[in-house]
Length: 435
Image 1 (cartoon, rainbow, N blue to C red):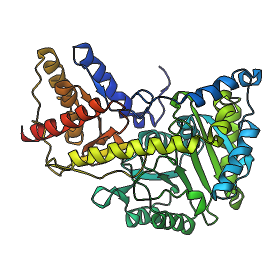
Image 2: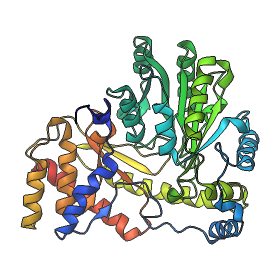
Image 3: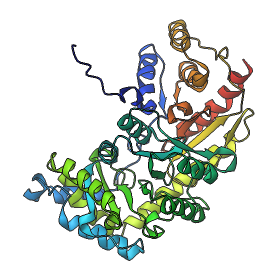
Image 4: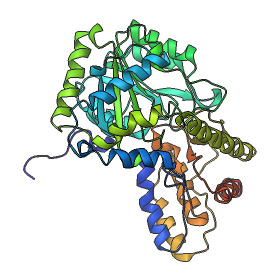
């Protein structure tokens, strides 16, 4: 082309959670059955949606208005419901006009970063959830800025690292928090959140808190909504239906804006997000229509607790197995439905392998890992794990971190398959490290 068509941030767009599926599908085509532990879709892993939720959705479909456009910001009655819902929960005052619906939080994340000034940066946690890290890096045309989560201290954020990076990088305009965290399952303690708010207030920053897993908590640490601690700091809180119902296919996420009018620049930035959404007309009406009915139903809390109990039980079982394996470390999660395993320093090499019985698969994986450099040794492990055992996990290097490891889920509803997954890891990791 006579003019370069490629955005300066195109190289920063990466989503290993789905990219690894391409390799897995080719391995599957060569005759290997795959256990997919790469993506956080409870429905795909066998969770059944309660009949009462399906009934509420079916009822909504009898109303012709369900098939119409919704207002750009979202159905007013749903935004009013969420405003009251937050107030009753003690989460802070929230004007319905400060709620904006999107086609999933992925859409919200894209709009939030795309509409930032290209010189304004948002620093986020590392390991980083790639939807955020890629979108932020792409908007700036540079690598994503991160503060460290310490796997030797239950994945808690290194506050000194964050404070120093904010202090000495004037381009940082905002701080991203993912709570409960993906991929680690860590829940930010209240005291840590207050320190992060204080840093934002001192340096005149705004906050983004992705709370998509807000109702998936089951550990000793209690989840505290950031909206309760803001102390006047402007903030965008991200919520959604995809993990709570669960209904990931609904693509229903929203942002809640707090303290918008405390800063005119932040208020103008929020207006630009609203304006960008207006160009799309609106988000999907059906999930907005049924959201108040689901969240206010007397059966909802009991349903949520049953899910928390299931994830807690699997977290206990996985932690009991994985912590006994030499050469790796694991922290039992407190929220979301993921577990992250890290390899000990210098435990991985570019010569390690697993025995692959299928000659075609063996040839395929050997060629696939040949280009991998020292920062993708965990991806090499993941490829061999798939080829030799048919288990797909996500390499931790895909989460914008220097740490080597992998993420698995706690979603498998079939106890036999979940046990098989843990048995595979207990056998494969020592064999790989010893090879």
